[in-house]
Length: 78
Image 1 (cartoon, rainbow, N blue to C red):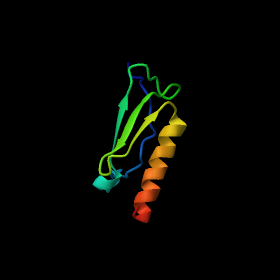
Image 2 (tube, helix red, strand yellow):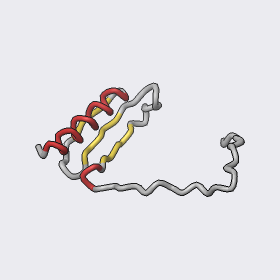
Image 3 (cartoon, helix red, strand yellow):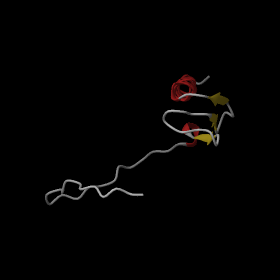
Image 4 (cartoon, rainbow, N blue to C red):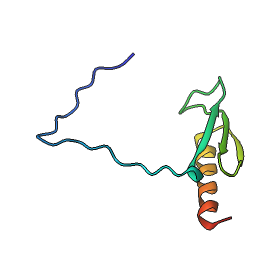
């Protein structure tokens, strides 16, 4: 069910979508368990595509911690 929201109108300006840079070394796969109910209950598995590093997560905090650690290590070249 979609809510009908009124968005502010831009006055004579055209919004341009941001150009995204999506390198493969920053790609992840998140597979959520059927019991997951984000954001309250997060249960699943996350995998960093290029390194194959995997974590099983049970909270948003664990998910973000894994993402930060993998990206930090990639920036260092570990």
